Length: 244
Image (cartoon, rainbow, N blue to C red; front, side, top):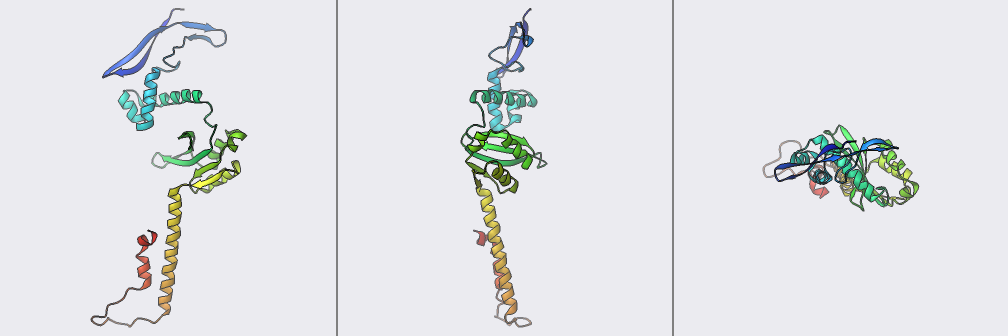
């Protein structure tokens, strides 16, 4: 069969766009039929050279797909497909990404102005995202643990997450031996709420004691006799200092 010319976009040379063009022979395979011969510098279903794909994926991981597409002068939808192909190639080299998940982080991230959520599972030891799932909740998180083999679940020793009850229930059911650790942001938030509740109780007790004590004289205070602030008002105004 006569070879067919294929054109693929390569990294730019300065301000000039560069394209690689070569003729690829078509071969007939008894198992998969007639197909074009593969080339080492690009994927079969890609219109870009691997060097450009790796550069786009690197930029997208640090500046976002929109900025990477604008800088490399490609379509934003093409940048998403490039990132997926590069991720698949890296996964093929590194093996199973669920192996060695000793330290695992779980959190949900909102996007689309808070209208949509994504559940994210992190590998703390490798410093990368291990899994993402659409929406959030017990069913979504359980679908991640269902992908793990029993030995992979047993390898998880520490799980970091916020104080969400649905995360704690799923982790306790799927990895009962793993230690659960709450992140510092939510720990500080719960401590602040507890201190604020103590302050409100102290204010209520001070107000009750003053109401049960001797009543202040009725009428205007005499000249030079300043009205002293009550204890309840003092406690009410020390919210920030009390938490500090």
